[in-house]
Length: 263
Image (tube, rainbow, N blue to C red; front, side, top):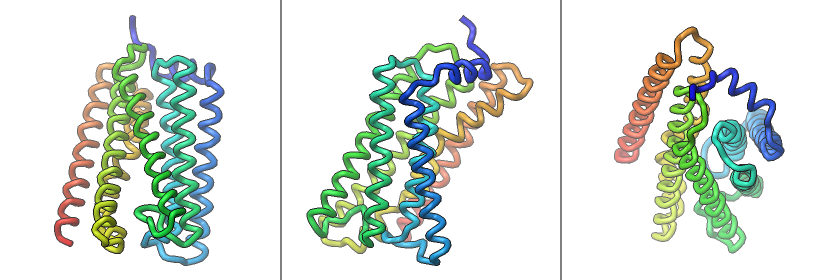
C-alpha cells in the first residue's frame, strides 16, 4: 500500500485529534508561558543568569518541557496506538513535564537548588520526585520509540525516518541527563556539593542539542514535503539531515568532554 503524502496525513490528523492530545497541547502551552514569564522577570530584574539559584532554570525548563510536550504529542499522533495506550502515555508524559517544571520553579523561588540538594528532608524529597519524573519521561519516550519502529502506518518515508531519529535523540537527551545526575549524586555522596553544582552539568550542551531533535528533524521532513521532489529524494535528503545532526551532536559532545577534562 502506497504511503500517503504528508499534507494528506496532517489533514487527516487534524480531523481526528484526541481529547488527551488537546489537553497535552494546552499543558505544553502553559509550560511555555511559565518559561516566558520567568524569562521576562529575569530580564527585568537583572538577576544572575548563572548558578543553581538563577531564574534561568525555571525559564529554560518551562520553555523546553512545554515545547517538547507539544512536539511529542504531535509526533505520537503519527504512531499507531490504541486510544487507551495513547491516553496513558501522553497523560503520564504531561504529568511528568508539569512535575519537573513546577518543582524546579518552586525551588528557584525558595532560593535553593533543585538538583543535588539534600540539605533538608523536604529538599531531598523534591530531588527524589524530580528523579521519579525523569524516569517516567524516559519510560514514555522508550515506549513511543519502540512503537514507532514497529509501526507500519502509511507515512512518507522521510517523516517516518525523522520521527524515529527524533525519538532516538530524545532518548539520548535523557541518557545525558542521567549521566549528569549520576555525576552530581556521586559528588554529593563524597561530600562535595559545591563541586557537584559547578561541574555535574558538563553535558548540558549535548542534552540541549539532543532534546530538540524531535522538533528539528520532523520539521526538516515537513519542509522537504513542500518541495517538488519525489518521496525518494525527500527521504534521502532527510537521511542527509540526520547524518548532519548526528555530526553536530558528536561535535558538541567532543567539545563538552574536552571542556570537562580541562577543568
